[in-house]
Length: 59
Image 1: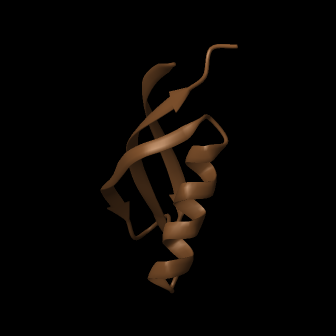
Image 2: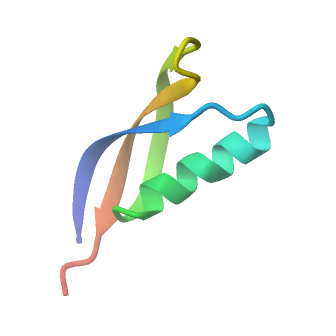
Image 3: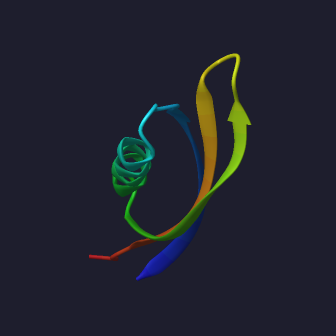
């Protein structure tokens, strides 16, 4: 198993629960998220920037 630091950009959602699900779905595209944080919000572009740690199985 390996861990990776990743960044992602996700469109801002009105509902915080929908935003959380969208962030987790984006991170799962690259592996299993261990933890993540919103590091920046761009209100003009209506996006949030995420930094996270994910794990991948080496098969």
